[in-house]
Amino acid sequence: MNITVITHFLLYALILNITVLLLWFWGLIYAREAINRLQRKCFKLSDETFDTLHYAALALYKIMIIFFNLIPLIVLYWIEKS
Image 1 (spheres, rainbow, N blue to C red):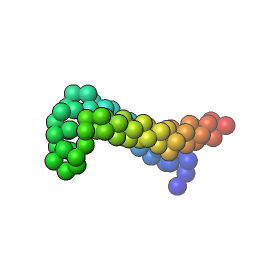
Image 2: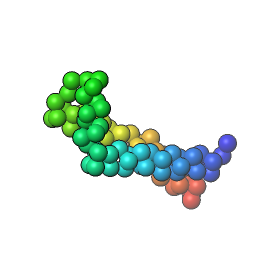
Image 3: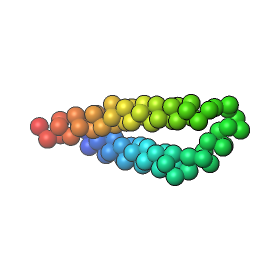
């Protein structure tokens, strides 16, 4: 396995993760009530708790994308070019 294969893998993983993040964000913007109703059947969450949990999870997911996909991808591109 060489650096190019790993770089392509990280690039595809980055695209996939950003797509998941955007779909999740889109779901919270346009289908918030449906998601909230579905989760109320399983958990007793207030609206504020629902918002707090989802936006905190979105922030954590975004940070993980940056640290585990974007930064290694940039470093590998930098190593390939030098």
